[in-house]
Image 1 (cartoon, rainbow, N blue to C red):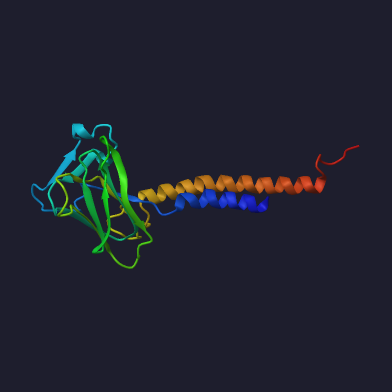
Image 2: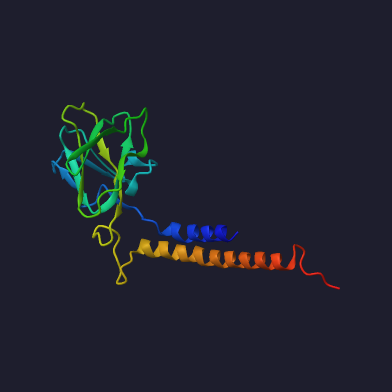
Length: 210
């Protein structure tokens, strides 16, 4: 009983405090698109995106061979999200100048963005750069980009803005959630332990009176 109560408390208190992902939208100015002019199309609130769940209702894509986008970050995991359609072609993914995957969002019909590639457990003592390129031998299909999701290191300037106490708004929400759930849980667990101990000392049906 005691171990179960402790486990419940730890799960309730710690789970909201686990590493939180940050989202970097395709419109973020820290993302480098090359070539910078004309090669990439950037849709924002375009009718074709309606109801497709794109982050910030925006999407960037290109049909140009050898065009690429890159982004440098400090974090321990990274995810690349892109769209799905019958016009999606191959996209080459590189991480820190190493080719890691060739992916495609090709589907029978237009749909919502999906996770095309991800990696975790990245070294936390160096910057990382992810690069998405249209393979030079690809057909004239699109390579598109909705967003990156990553787990930033403390102090990463691209993460949510920090207050004087060093916590971002999302950190405070997570901490408040953990406290809000954890404190009542531990009180309930403590009461359960007390009642369990009391029932054992007095007998299953309580003390005999008279």
